[in-house]
Image: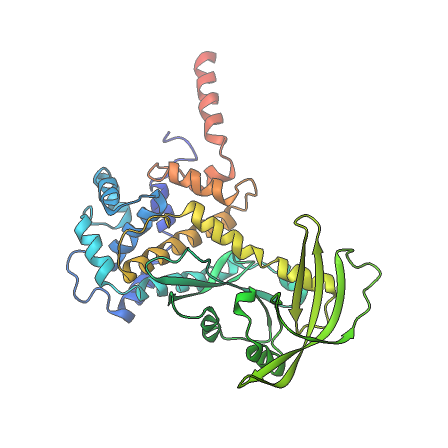
Length: 385
């Protein structure tokens, strides 16, 4: 094994953890004073423990501590002094502010932006896309809802906000810094006519779906291009009513594109304030919103978010941030190796299986058969001798 180019002096888990610069963690610690009253369990140790819980898909804090007990000889690579106790992790999840993990995530996102960024969407539509997702009913944990904004080229959230279960979903829009160099795509659950009016006034492009019961007045129909997708049924300008005190105060002019989905036998109505793109492109922009659904499915399938390791809001949010950090590390690894044979779920699975094996990730993932071939070659040499 030592002669193999796939051997590493650091475990697979340690190699992924090494993608997190210690100075970034320390900067977050200094900002939120997260180690001020801690003697034995630092923020770094807390982070590594929660990332281990995520990576190994453990379902309880006891599983986390039991997992570490068998790794005492390997903890030095992770900068852990000792295996953490269950009560120690539980207390830290309750007392240490989730904000320190939030900052670590955003700092990592900034650092790896050159690796994550992809120009395909900008080349296609002239601007970057930003996508918002409404939380699913019934998926709210601990009385909180998780809202996400992503860039589809990143395959990672660029904004995450937590609200309590009673807060209206549209409040998430207040946290987004809208600029006119992005196209904003979001679910119809975020429909807000006054905000759309703001978008029009400030030339901020957006695409969303029209609610099925929305009232509007047709103003002008646009001629469809000869090469338009046959599923495009209509392209027109409409006026939506803006009401104040129950009375129509003014009108909101927007574009409406109607698309027939043959596969699902459903008619979709998209509204937008973009007029310099074709009806086909407006449809494609909204279809890109499914990237956030893919990310949501990816997080559910590959991260331990079906079981929460604490029953208080702070603990739940810490676990979510650590799941997002682990997802980001895997995404960075996937982009770095540039090996298209590894689907994300397969990559996450093989990492989990070899978490504390001493395999050189880069060489192994680029050519997973190489080590096996080396062993076969060495055995053949024995027979030749």
